[in-house]
Amino acid sequence: MTTVHSPSLPNALEGRSLDAAYGRIRVVEGVDLQVAAGELVVLLGPNGAGKSSLLGAMAGTVRGGGALTLDGLSIAGLPPEVRAARGLAFVPERRGNVFPAMSVAENLELGLRLSPPARREPIRENILGMFPILAERMNAMAGMLSGGEQQMLAIGMALGREPRVLLLDEPSQGLAPVIFDLLRDAFTLLRRQGLALLVAEQNLPFAAGIADRYLVLVHGHLVAAGNSAELQGVDDLMALYMSADV
Image 1 (tube, rainbow, N blue to C red):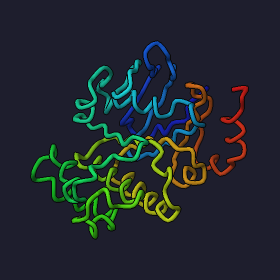
Image 2: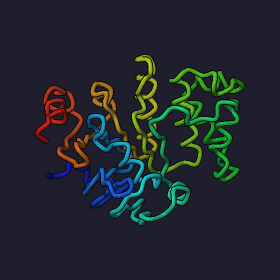
Image 3: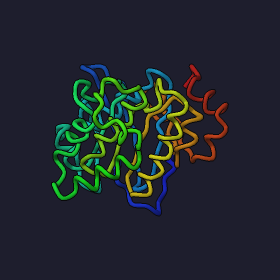
Image 4: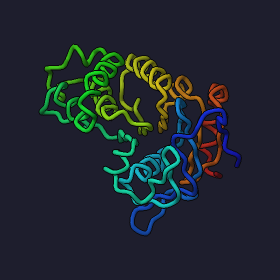
């Protein structure tokens, strides 16, 4: 399979022969991918395809193998906190990525704590500009926010140290459709700011609205790749990655 790529932009993230495993069970094998600065790549696939495991392996929270570079420097084998310090942020699929007994302001402050003091206020303003509802809820307990508001807060916390790459696992899952436009607008702004985004999704209409490129993962292997225009033909993609013959 030939991976579709945007050669005019430098790669922020590049993986070669990436694997993910739980004990002796390998659930992802031999994945090659690249995400350029200012690009959003969507990782598609059915439940159980290995999307979450692949993102976890890249973030260092799942045992993985292969070559992984961030801005040309290897981060393979490094613990999650070191990968994060190098510029890789990860928001897992599960809800509860915020501290419910703390306020929105306190959660954001935790996300900012490792940024240089002089950068914290500009970063905070950037986050609140993307997600203005959070600015209105700064004193609210995070556990009292809606699912969509908690997702925005989790993304805001991940942006607190100005990462170079953001991994998002199923950001639209369980959210009201009205939140989709807010996320799309935020992703557009982040791309303009030069962030590289790799987003695992099952919601094909949402994916079509945010992607520059897509990858399809089935049974732990990449089986297809393409550009955003091809995501408009969702019937063909559904037939591909839901096929039992893949």
